[in-house]
Length: 323
Image (cartoon, rainbow, N blue to C red; front, side):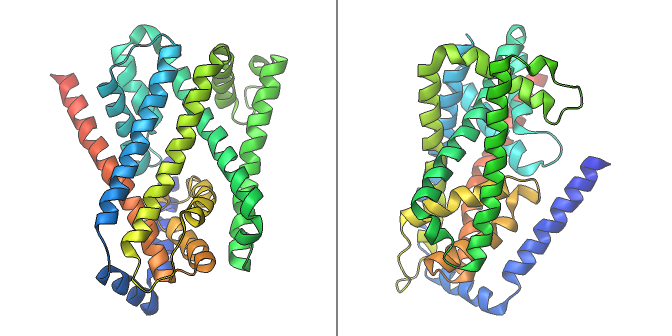
């Protein structure tokens, strides 16, 4: 019942966000104008950019698996990565992409379940480290720009509060690992299982810091390439008379937007992402608000198309298992 309630809440927030963004006739006119002048070649470039995101994620996971002594073919590891993408995007509140990756991986290497689990835990940790790194650089160089208008200032403060929470989690993790206190945490301690799993991953991977650093750089590259796919979505909609939005503007907005949409408050961040783009891209980069919202939708559609490929891969794997 709790899961069902969460899904219904996410659905409600999603529908409310979509209605808020697209109900205004002026916004719909801006969207129609952008579509009339759209350059769909940019969407192809954006689609290829997102393909690079999943390629970098596959290479990163391969590095983490091999530290654990797990040899997994490049093709199957790439397939499992996009299967995870499908479950993360389209089945909220039911089962996560990490769980599905591990499910199929356990079928292939039943004797190395611990190593496989820790590779995924380290994958998550690198994601946290990288988003903190990118957001810190953005805030350091463009803090005044992000706070230029009250609407964007409020969004910036919310994102910074969430990032501070992530940083607090990371600091707590390092302190507990350093003190050797993870196993002594009370059973009802918040995020106890996640802390223990992440701490075990840190303990095992700290002997391979060179490989972990390479995986970290790949994670940074994956994030930046993901942001570029949204820049391509904007370029696909830019009219000949539109103000040119720089790559730096998009790279400055996206870490904050992604931090907020990572919360499970809507289905795949739909509705929330469009609202944030309308404020951040619209107010800060002088993009028509309707076009800014549509940019968010197109960027998500690019990602979703790869998720659908992951869904097809899941059906292939499941049918192959039955045979």
